[in-house]
Length: 338
Image 1 (cartoon, helix red, strand yellow):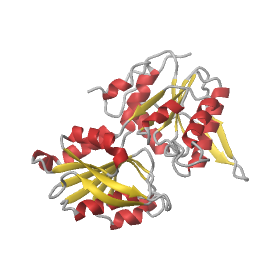
Image 2 (cartoon, rainbow, N blue to C red; image 1 turned 90 degrees about the vertical axis):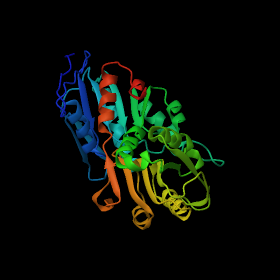
Image 3 (tube, one colour; image 1 turned 90 degrees about the horizontal axis):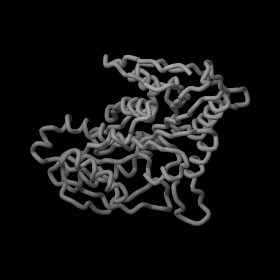
Image 4 (cartoon, one colour; image 1 turned 180 degrees about the horizontal axis):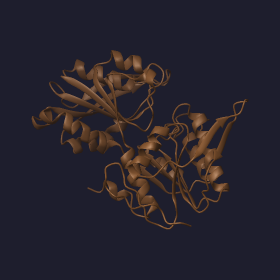
């Protein structure tokens, strides 16, 4: 086993990757740009693998360099097309295991099926647990992810999970963008539902602002539909920042923005770690009261869904630092010790 590289990152700082195992970063087809950003931060090259399809649609894979004894990190969010990306990830894990990798670390910035984490009615599956089992039994030794829809999903795994968060990145952006309003005490952080209060409270602490909550009724007859009921907290005359982990069809966030404007909010911004943006999301956002919607880049946004209202910030530096710490057997949780 060779010693790892001592690369220089794009920022010019020397990053020392210690340890006795080679560090190798591979990418699936879900988000290769994200993997390249991580490699750029670490100053290492993206390891060689070829992905292809057989004529009947089956997934093919060729690992084009040795991984024997290596510390392998495979980057693949399980975003849309979720099932294709998940199965490709499982195939890659199996290939690395059969090729005698020393450790296989799954870097999945967005963990698909995370919202299917419990039974809300009889005879429903708990698919998040099934996916955790599939990753583990395929040969994964560790998972690095961000802002799971429910933190307790970490307990679905029988392997270590490093749970990162994009909230400090998003908070830092709004601190800079809304500095005058923050100094005047004119900003309020808003949770779009009761379930997101803990997340929004942490965000409010980062911005040193008050907190408001949108109390909504979710329709179980129509999927992804919510009706705004009431707003708890003072929002009149203020700039509101809605905070969520995932924005999917954008019904919740757009209804919340409309409710805030009706109750006298001056301007409404919104942010979330994961930009799922399925179905009518972009049409709703375009017609909404939201001034700007800010995401991290855990999920790629295709050109067809680009909008002047939508902005992405890169969370790749955080994942690069986490990978560096895992590789060198240092604490990851200390990244958030403040």
